[in-house]
Structure formats: structure tokens, C-alpha cells
Length: 349
Image (cartoon, rainbow, N blue to C red):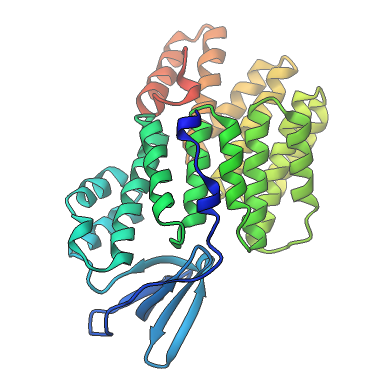
């Protein structure tokens, strides 16, 4: 594992602006897209993990990177439009195929070179998380990108992705370190998300008391933005899972039932994790039929997150088998192996 570990001192040295000599402003300008997907034209002149400077006819504007959904560059090859369409649709295989046809050294623009290389590494990571293929290679490639491009504006997104890869590989200790880098972001909601992810990785190591303490700190945080409140709900699910593991299953059930009753089921990640946690509570209290219903909720309605869906399928295989419904168990196994064959939840099924 030491061979894969990132030199995080390099990655975290992102305090000062790294200047790039942008091209003169022409008809083909750079564009920064904000959270409302509105393009703001100009020339990107400076970039760090925290901020991007855009030169416009009316002066230089500075954007915090958490406000930016994407940046396009005036001299992008035409293939990049197709790449971005595929990324929007989460079609990472097709996007990666097109990205591999591009030569990043063919441009004199350092920012465009970074964009191509990062998107390649990001697509590899996304594919590996779902399929399970070449996760170690994907992790190494993404690490290597940030070793040479620590000031890239998607640094925090990359840190979270590295943590997800490490978690998927079962290296939860390294996942905690990657998520800690996400927690270096200057925005409160990012810090909360990092704490939730770190707590989840700690719980995966059976460090339930430590994980619960992290979750409770998130829940008690005074930040009240929409994203902060969402992280508090995810932390509430995590806390309930820790309580269940500590033998307080009935208390955990009450917390989870209240959360499901009082929140919007459109949040697939939140509800998927909540129903999985409910299933775990019913398993621990020897109520397999009730557990099966919760995991079916995830399989049929809240399957948007790969790891959450794989977890539900794993338990459904066991529960259907115990109930002597071998045809249904075979169906669940086929889905798990086909869609999430590299997941830790697919091992030994």
C-alpha cells in the first residue's frame, strides 16, 4: 500500500495562485459555467484549488471553485464537446474513448492540457468504481495527475474520488487520509462532507465509537445551508448505523424511520443508505422479512449509488436463499456480478 500512498504535502500546497499566460481574447473565448449553468466568457488567467481568475472586457473576476461546474477553453478541439456531453450523461466509457484520441501535448495551453489529463483520470476512476476493473491503476493515475498539477481547480473533487477508490479497494485507512484532504477546503459544507466520508470509512474498519463521534459533530454543526443540512442527514444515517452496531438497534430504528418520514425521497443517496441501515437493524434483531423489504426498497427505488445498491443486492442474495427462493437469489447474484463485479459486496456470493 505504501507504493500507492500520495505525497499529500505536494497536493495540499495550493495556497498561492499559479499564473498561466492565457491567450489574447478572441471570438473563441474560455467560459466558466456557474451553478446555474450560465457561461461567463473571458480568458482564464490564474487557477488554484480554491479560486479561478477570469479576465473579461470589464476587468478580472475571481470565482471560488465550489461555484464552478465546469470550464471550457477557447482552443478546445471539437471532440471535447462530445466528451462533455457524455460526461453530463455519466457515459464515462464513451467519454474516455474520445479523450484517449486527443493528444494533450498538441496544445500550447497548459490549462487545456490539464483538463484533458484530469478528465481521462477521472473517467478511469468512475469506471473502476462501478466495474471494479483496474482500481489500483485508476488510483495511481489520479494521484500522479495531482502530483504534477496540485493547483488544478478540481482538486477537492479529485481528493474525494481518491477516497472513494481507496474505500472500494478496502483500504479504509488511506481513504480517511484522502477525505481529510477534502476537509482542507475553505467551505463549511465541504468540511462537513469530508467528515461524513471519514466517519463512513472509520465505520468500515469497525471503529464505530470513533465514527459515531464524527457523525455527531456533523449533526451538531451550526451551518444551515441546503448542502450542510444534507450532510447532517447523511450523518444521521451513519450515526444510526453505529448505534445498531453497538447494540442499540431499537434507538437506531426510530432515528431512521423518523428521517425517512420527514425528508424528500428524491435524494437517492440519502434514502438508499437509510434503507440499507434499516435492513441492518432488522437483521441484527432477527427479523429477516422486514430486512428484506428494506433492501428491496434500495434495489427497486434507490439504486443510484453503486456501493449502496451493491450492498443491498449482497443482502438480498442471502435473504432470498434463506427463504428458499433460489430463483430470486440467482437473479440478485447475476445483477451484482454483472454491474458491480469488482465491489467488495460481490466477493464470495
